[in-house]
Length: 144
Image 1 (cartoon, rainbow, N blue to C red):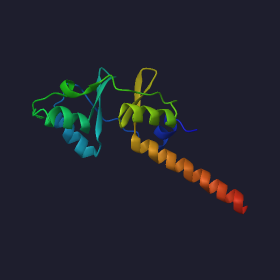
Image 2 (image 1 turned 90 degrees about the vertical axis):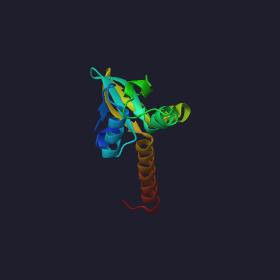
Image 3 (image 1 turned 120 degrees about the vertical axis):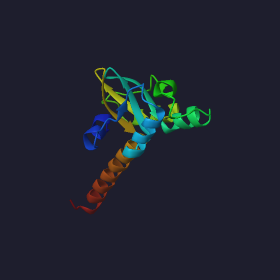
Image 4 (image 1 turned 90 degrees about the horizontal axis):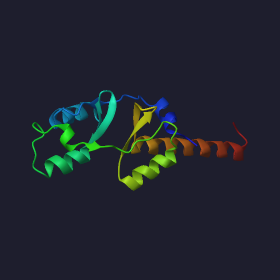
């Protein structure tokens, strides 16, 4: 059974974060530049929240706010659901499905060590299934 640590070890684990005093506009520029759909919000090296495209759509666009004047701390999701690096992929999928979220910050001993997305989890599950299929095919055909 794979765990979050396995995903973090295999992916380029850059943590893109911003302070809460950042404008929404600057956060959107960074998200576009890095081709990501969420940014972790950190204060004094600790996770303070998360800002996602969904936050932008629901809390800026639909409320008629200005992204150049609004600060992230006004619209970020505070106390985001997080997991440890020892959490199973199945547990992460359960959390994401039931909490309607697409990103999970990974916290280890109170330190932010990464983030996993729904895409990361799906990719891991597909790789594991492919490995199992190949092994079963080899077993059936007697090849290695």
